[in-house]
Image 1: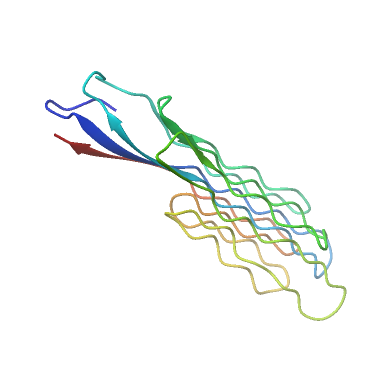
Image 2 (image 1 turned 45 degrees about the vertical axis):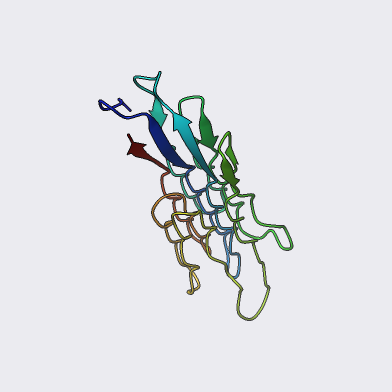
Length: 185
């Protein structure tokens, strides 16, 4: 970011990327965890003595292949002022009773928000399987849960949403992060 002439304050919103959904295990009813949402930090900064600042936007976590975990989302930051970590990736299928992965966390801001946790994996030997959406961030919803027997997880919504887990298939990718700078004279 390069400061325009006359700007003295900025309000920065930083969102970490979403985690990728886990891949379902082989066989039926082996759904995986969904990825978690990225955290958010919001800060008002006096930039009267700052001419430029490094902006980093986290990349979305990759969805896991069949029976593999998804990757965590990347961290977004505005220089050293504030940052937000990405959501954790979802574990592979067949992990009955395991809580979903943790959401990312904002830090350094005037307001710091934790992203929504990803959905837990459910392994049901018979009958219908419960599958959960990916975790949401403040700026993007999680990928919708799958409904079929061998579905690939859905990608997270824009700006920090986690991907949903796959069912006997790959997980959905997490959405990338966001750095939004509002400038004031």
